[in-house]
Image (cartoon, rainbow, N blue to C red; front, side, top):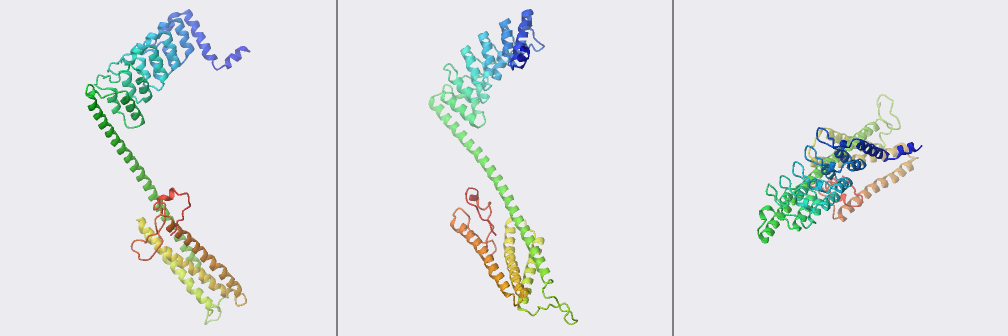
Length: 443
């Protein structure tokens, strides 16, 4: 029962492993110093895997294992500091604080490795153990401040600058200070934070060390102006790209809207033409059957029928003309398409009104004299609905155009002297995106 509970514990595996390691080291103490072909020790492997119990078991057997270095000269502390494992760094330092100053083959200490990461607690732990490593240089002459600046670590730079013994103007083998390296960082928030922190700490460029403060201030001012202009140019370029991309998308949407309108008008024109064509051959009252007037309608002499014929023919020919124009005329430019739609739109109005008139006129013939009240009722009801709908639309469109200064006013199409409604679109009305009111789009 106890064995099963132990197996279910999340830490039982590590405790069991640590116990096995302790038992093995008690039998064969030399195991803790055994290394593979890369000179990697068991302590190094356990530290990299963050197995604290195993690390403590190995150090309990032999604390000198902490100083074992790999072929590249790095100790377990170097790697633990680089990956930011604070508890592992603390455990290693507590056993042997002297390992803080050990350098690898590049001349870098664990502090050089720690400032490449993100964990400031590790840096503080290392400096608490040995503050002398703060200004140690690697083989390229870089201090920890150089490394933190080159790796774009503003938090690390600010932390290192808090120590009074920091050599803020230390020069590496390439005659570069931390400020020189900061100037090479691409523009961004990290670059600004690092430069500001170094400037507040009195950092200088290598060429300005030893010059008067006036010259330093002038150089700093020129540098700030240069970076300000550079950042503004980058922002302007980015803004222009975004605006161009948005304008391109809006033009695409605008063309699609015009094309959809063209397709809709064509469909309606075909529908009206079909209805007008069929209506003339499906008349009420039948036709004469004698030889002289074969095919003639009994209502041919009625005034309502004559009005119907005229309006029906008008709707038919206008619709056919619109269909012919739409399927034969190709307008690549959006402005040309808008002009065609504007003209075709007026023709469709005429065709629709002719169809309405034809329906009302034939209604008087169909119902006969006794049912004329039905035709009158249809006329009284239908005409106000049609006129009221058109008047309401005109009212809202005109009110929007003339009362809202943020919208473009109605303009005449180029090449036309008559007043016409132009196509209102989101492309021509940028404020449509910012307004909370619904917009009306009309031809």
